[in-house]
Length: 488
Ligand code: BES
Ligand code: MN
Ligand code: ZN
Image (cartoon, rainbow, N blue to C red; front, side, top):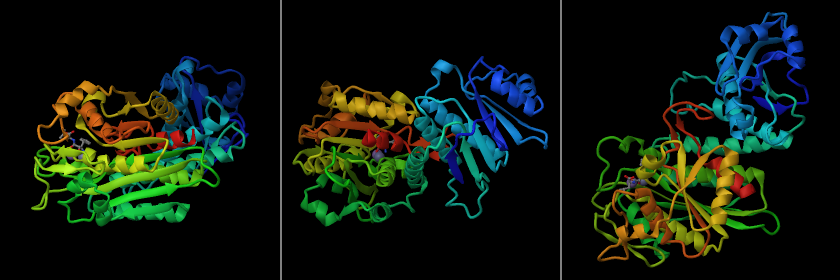
């Protein structure tokens, strides 16, 4: 499938299906639209009247046009109120149109939507929406029920030649799709070993540097916290450090650290009842980190980026850490593990210490860290904690542009009292209340002075239902935010 932006407007285009956007309560047949309506023998006016189409957001109407017409089908898309349409709405409209075109077996599609922000960003948003809505993950089906769209060309109308914007969208979509597929893959397909291989592929194809620390290397660095989690697994831990360096002097140096639990059984504090079967997604942070790396490798910004994940499984065996064990992290701090199911923070502790030693200007970690964050913010919104207002604002701006939602949460120092241990420097879990906040406070113990943002993405990495640009399963969240942040 080829996506391109063209000068041709929706009033002059011909092809299989034309999608036209309408603002709410501004559905009026006049001017250019009247001319097009006439060319289509009144079809647009009839469709609007018959379906009582008012242009409400997320509404659409589709019909077949007579076969002598230059267009075979028209798709009317509601954009909601004019003053409320943002780039995110453009992206989800692109997704909705792509889904309709797929259902209608359209081969050539023209999309005529208004410009939001500017032509380049509108083009990029539409292309991302189309590409991400049409992604189907059939890898584990012996025979695909959903064979994907038959679309051959998508033309984004009236936007001029926007080659660079299309390329950006394609690079970002490829990163989002990689993250989705890593999250979708079960724990017997994506393991610490295969995650490291994926990092190797990205490094090889994109010219990045790669360092994989084996268990012995991690021992030498004193990563007792990470290795405590890893010790019950039959699979070797892999500490992944992928490095993108621009040509010339980098504008800044940053680190992205993703939680990489390819399976979280809970350990001896075993996850009983519902929930354990979805814990293949506990490497969503690492998946998005690698997804971002894949996109960055293509986009080549003037920023040095370190992509880090302390990958492992959290398993049970005779070698497993006991609840109550005391671990020593690579910054010398000791941790009483009062719950082996709070393992993500244990792996991140050593990864954050490692990241800070690289003397980067900023660290962003992302983790499917707590069920408490889902309780607080629901499935669609990630939690954001930061020690640095400026960095927090950068991430919020990047997320806004990406159409990914985050809500800043407090680093309430007082709550760390709940993590005090009588025997070690801290426990790894506090009381049930404020569970995502104490998790963030725990991580903070492992970042000394580098500006840092923590993203809890336990909810939004996975979608139970298709909607917007997401299909059921891994969403690839927050690859787009990360990429925008790096580029910004
Ligand atoms: N991976 C889970 C968090 C999670 C839960 C992610 C649901 C996605 C969906 C994490 O390792 C975990 O088990 N957290 C515990 C912490 C608790 C023991 C303090 C939790 O949230 O219950
Ligand atoms: Mn856990
Ligand atoms: Zn976990």
